[in-house]
Amino acid sequence: MTLEQTVGLLYLAGCILVGLLASRRVGTSRDEYWVAGRRIGTAVNSLAIMAALASGGSIIGVMGLTYAQGIPATLALFTGAVLGFPLASILVAAPLRRFGRFTITDFLRFRYPHPIVARFVPVLIVVSFTVYIVAQMKAAGLTAAVLLGLEYETALTLATLVFILYVSVGGMLAVTWTDVFQGALMLLVVLGAAGVLVWQAGSPARILAEATAGAPDLATLRDRPLTSYLGSFVIWATAIPVIPHIVMRVFTARDAQGARVSLNVAMLFYSLMILAAVFAVAPVGRVRFPDLADADLVFLRVMEQDFPPLFRGLAVAAVMAAVMSTTDALLLACSSAIAHDLLGDTLRRRMGPAATHRVAIASAWAVGLVAMWLAYSPPPLISQFYTAAIGLLTAGLFVPTIAGLWWSRANLAGGVAALLTGAVVYLAVHFTPGAPPLSAILAALPASAAAMWAGGIFGRPERPEMLAEIARLH
Amino acid sequence: MPRAFLPMPRGDRWYLGALVAVAVVAFLPWSRATVIGSLPVFAWLMAALMVLSPVVALLRLWWSRRP
Image 1 (cartoon, each protein chain N blue to C red):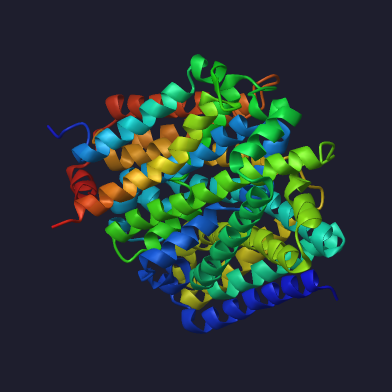
Image 2: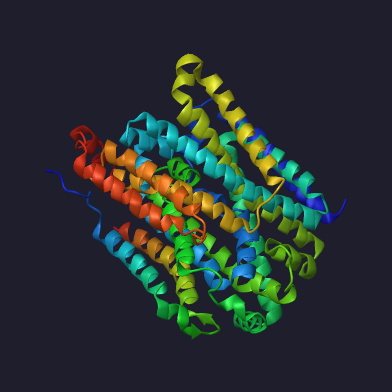
């Protein structure tokens, strides 16, 4: 067994051990399983939030996108995600933390008590997150195949079984413990790799100058219309405040102030990692490997050529960490969407907390295995692929959530109309032949806002008790 | 008659407004056509937003907690 394989396997074994240890503390408590008892401190939560957002797309995908579509296009997409954090910090962190439940669906069905909201939101979450998970699994499979010499399918199966196991038994506590370690590992490897490459070149400016001289298209916006770049920026800026696996982390914070600080520190970590990837690692890879068939391989090829076995082993673990830290949070969000949002009331009424817990575990396995099956035929350019799925979720949830927290005229009619209109318009535009990739959000969000406005103006005004409750959250 | 929007602290309003303004400027045509140091201004503005927005937000939070 090579050193890289040993490091990779030790890492996977460590994750399982953490899941088993966490499961002993979690028991069948809903508070412990879904939100880790709401006692996660600011420093730990910052790394965990960063790790939850920084997926395989933020290591493998960001460099693949830079390689294929250039630095400006990549920054448009990932800066959107960074700007989403201040939006989340200001618009949702404090009121949702004071709301004090478990999921974004809990808030939406409280604010808009209607069966459509209670059923459609969890379904939307499961569908879009399953697509997101497929993209993560491709990153895990590629990494292990290239750096460990395993078959893609074998690597995919192994990684999937490990993270489903520790998420399903350990819940949010296992996800938090592993995310902290995984976040630190990602920062170490990406910043470390970028530092070594900058040291070899002499300065970041020299890397940039050499790369753009050798590959001028790296520095230009090309291929796609402006609406496509703007769309990717808007999707992520509006996704972060409502995306369930980030919102669940807000619920784990000790208090509202802790939630706001955690979001901003996480954003700083995330920015540093993305900029190191975009300005150092990807340009070096583009110059050294100009003819890669799959752009998502560029980071792995640079690791393979420039770094010793121990660092390559850490790189495998870091990409696995990136994949797992997001996928575990996504799986937990899917599990909560099924076992808590969709079936929770019925299960608790008829079968008790132990049965609900078993359904949560079974849901994590079901979603994980379906995503693994889909990932055996992986999509190209994972960042773009999962961004489209997140766009669907954002198109449905952003306006009802923000208006529900901040607009006094937001009411049941407006909330339901905004939710359905956003999702339907997004799908209609996305699948229209000739529509620029990722631009559907630019039509879906205004349509959703218009539906909310119409419902708020022409529908029955909201009850004073509900408005008083919302005011209390602020 | 309740207010249409719930009140937001003035600092938060200015901060959000500034972020949106920089993003709008970044997507204007000139910033994609003007090149500085091998990259369009658009890319530099995006990179600046990535670094400055968390730093400013943290400074604001730190400032607001001062006695």
